Amino acid sequence: QVQVMESGGGLVQPGGSLRLSCIASGFFSSYAMGWYRQAPGKQRELVASITRTETTDYTDSVEGRFTISRDNAKKTVYLQMNSLKPEDTAGYYCKASTLRSTYWGQGTQVTVSS
Image 1 (tube, rainbow, N blue to C red):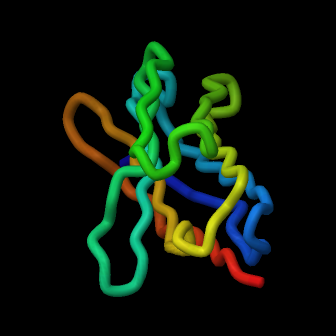
Image 2: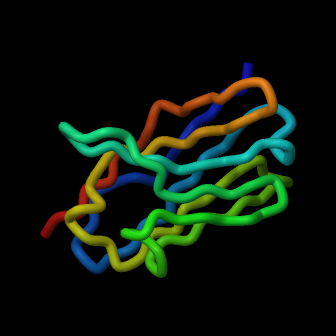
C-alpha cells in the first residue's frame, strides 16, 4: 500500500505564492505523479502532472503560473503556485500512479482571498 500525504496549503492573498508538497512511500521514482484540485460543487480536475522521466503537463488555466517538480531522493513532488487567483481556491490532492494502481492523499486546502 502506497501512502500519500500532502502539505503546504493555506490562506494567501491574490497575487501571492504557495508551495505544496506531497510525499509518497514506496518505490517513488517509478511513479507518475499528479496534482488535482476540487472546488465546492465542481468536479476534481487535473492541475499538473509529471512522469517518471520528468515530462510535465499543465491545465491551461495554470500554465505559466504553476510549476510541478519532483525530488526522487526525498520521495516528494512539489507544486509551486505563483500569481494565485481567487479561482485557484480549492482542495488540492496528490495522486501517485503505479503500473497497477493509483493512490490519493487526503488533500490540502488552498484559499486565495483578500
